[in-house]
Length: 305
Image (tube, rainbow, N blue to C red; front, side, top):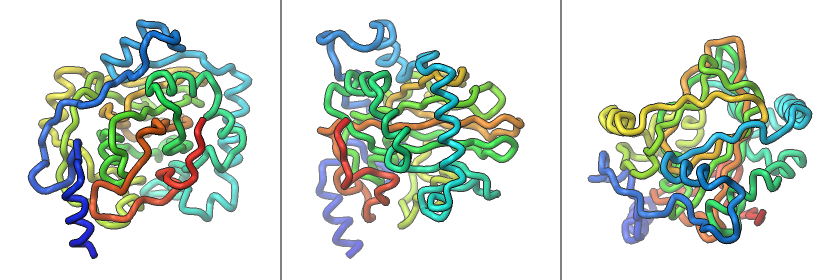
């Protein structure tokens, strides 16, 4: 069966191969637009912001949500963490070396409040414009990054994983992070490599079955080599994203990013919504494995926003 799957996948047109024989270290120039939307109708962003997103791969929008709204989101975040049904499900991910909650997936289905937030025009209008299509939630989660014990997440391109393990065909997706606790330069902030989204790096290694069970705690596959990271940072540098609660970080699906461990007393919590273009729905994974579970990759319960 595995051989048959390998043969089937080898015949597909894989525009962004990775974790395959002979492609490790191959750098491919991006073949898809970064911003799909045009000038008409007027974008929900300033033209300078649109251009910055196109060139740098991300934008930070401050004070999108009010202090009162953030307090409601934070309360819901704590409620989900204490929910017994969630705690006994595969949707809750703990830290590698403790029982501290690292992430909760599928929050747009678990919480009516966060479902409503994912559809809020302050977020969804940006996704629809940049992707120039109807959109749906490919993945959602709450990230808790607890103080003292919140572990790192190594450099990676989300698209590399979504392409290989989920079957996302093209780079027509983006992520929106809603900052819920102050992101400081010492509590394990999101780190981005500007301009890195213009290139796709084929990674080494063969994806084992059930890889997501460990990769959500620690990323060890789908990561570029040290030399590639040096080249990317020599061109774009590294940006540590700091910001107040209620701010948004919008970044391209192929932007290289990661975060260091949080050894400060201060947690770094955020909500994470991945918007995919409806025309870019996932197919069979571009590896010889079954699809990842629905709570990690929306495949069956697609709801247009």
